[in-house]
Image 1 (cartoon, rainbow, N blue to C red):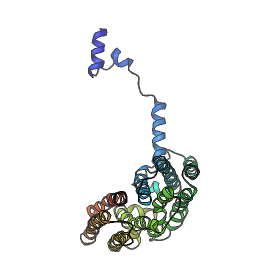
Image 2 (spheres, one colour):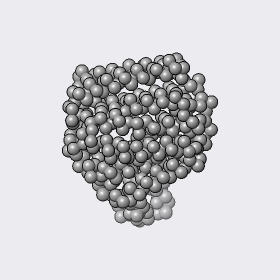
Image 3 (cartoon, rainbow, N blue to C red):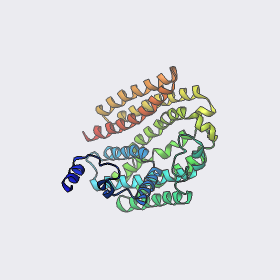
Image 4 (cartoon, helix red, strand yellow):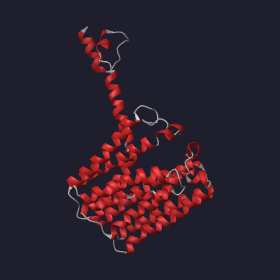
Length: 320
């Protein structure tokens, strides 16, 4: 019998329900499952999928600023601080928008909107991450990088989320400055200072934000209408939004080519900027001329890849 039991367990054959073999198997502890779910919810508050792109722009800009390559420790400390700062901003954003999130189909399942994490605990978590980010960056990288990360966090929370977003359809344009801070943090982390050239990566993210976010807002316009959030498609209509997306896409691609004229980038970057830019404008034009949910989704998802590849091209151009 012992030999048969061993064969069953090692061979991957499921024993019959109620058998002694099955009875000996440990069942998942409810407390363990609950703890894992709680940890997962707190991680969700930091918006990790968004942070991955922010960190890529940060690290790529570090190599733009220092083509010889910053020390690995500096890169890792900067990534940690960037995650903490952006995660803290994300958690505070969850706290501030928990009531509107609960009314939106896309966000009603979020940890604070659904009540799985209390508002007080979520807010404390976000503030703790933000303070930890500034202290950690200041002590392990430099205080300029720490200060810029604080500006980005506070700008996102107070300037964008609390002031601009509920008041004007241009919220994402003006508030885009907060989301464009990671490249400046990366530049400061790599060199300890900022130069005029540091403004190019910042400007690119700043101008990329409106077409990227407005494409998303076309997809979830009804949710924004439910909460009274004055996003551009809700206030001005979808046709105006599509034209604005195309206009900003053209402006964005134009600006991406300008750093070549200043000597910051060379042929590798120029080829990538023009090739990726042509695709980006093409998608924006297709959305404007043949509007559809599929076209908006295609532009939204492609914009993520566009920015990632463009910043990789920046770094490669400078290093090579």
